[in-house]
Length: 590
Image (cartoon, rainbow, N blue to C red; front, side, top):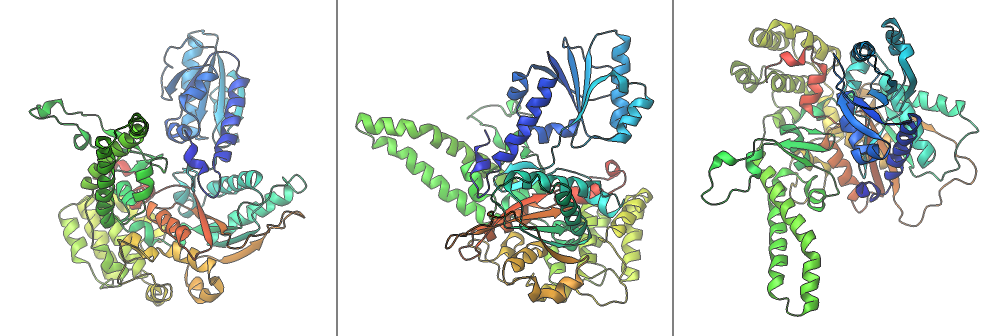
């Protein structure tokens, strides 16, 4: 099931197995038949660790979603609540238990906090008079979840908001703990680099935790050579831009959640001749997207404009393979053809799916003017028209934020104009959202200081005029010309090193630093001739699929000498990111 996690340079299945083992141990603590009551947000991430079959093996008979009122009827001995440590969820649990007690059913209650226990939550349960009802109160430390052979995410949806709006560093503590778990399984990471305030906090916490655990370290040869911690606010521009890789565009248009995408069913219907269209499916088609599927692994990181050619080439190969059957004469040849049939049929259905997806996605261009610095200091007519047509508010906020970031803030009259137009068109309740965007640095007034963006753009070559989308030779292909700043920083760190761009680093927010962790004697790697180094790049506050594609591109470059594993607090795109900063996002007009 999770074979694709062990294909890469680092076997991430080890992490998944460790998480499964802990889950089994907890379930075995609760002897007898069980029902799990899920905090709905956790079901997706948990699905990547353990399928229902594993739970069934440990006597889990029923599963329910946590909601207020009475629990559904279930003839089981144990009821286990799997929840995040949120106060509002404690009130629902209390309601569930009180209504169970009224029924006088002899049940054992257990609660499993993911990823950490919380004193505040236990206090709330105590106030509600139900704390004593629990036999086991435990925590299940699920920090980093393997999403693919080179990708880990905490899926901590509010991390950016907490760090930059609420000054709450809980997610940074979870990050540091997750990195300690990783080091326990894969060895101490000798070099740590970082850029940004949050990166500094995480590194400090890791070093402190390491001192506290001194002496109990595993004697494991380090798998990672370097850890790079990057704050999302060092590069606010990249997630605002529309991703132009195949996977990035699927996420922009349909949203990828926990490795799955839901697509409109009509494109996938097998229509037969003369069949009435009323029989078309109405349920969205749910597809899993990861490197376990050969074709997807091949096209996911390509620029969208190169996907069509790749699909038609694949179609020709598959057609030719099916034609082979006419040439199979001997029993041996027929047998060989039949043995290849399941693989070919899977490839054919995979091709059909991706051809349908490719037809669903269309193109986007206005943003490139901002990235190249064209007329960023005045009211943009396209944004003006979009507000007048009452386009979705999130689209407007993305574009205005992008203009602000590329111009180091907006002039007072431009700022006031956008603010007035947005509030009058979409409603005054969005004043809170605009304030949040200001606080996060996405929207700001231009101060007297000069605009550093052109300098940063030129020094780091963030805009490449002739980006080759078909056969890329630079990471800028992921945005058809714009090279993500976060990935350029990663690229320069590997070679020639950050010392060469000291001036630019000072222009970007937050400190930059380097730390070394001492390795126990005998654990220093002896590198073979031509062996690549491995860097874990951790994005604090979220990362987009286009940035992931750019890092994969760097890993595959012949002369890079570096392989990248990507970790993040959350996989995001411009829409989900802006949404997380909105107050009352449900009130936004979609």
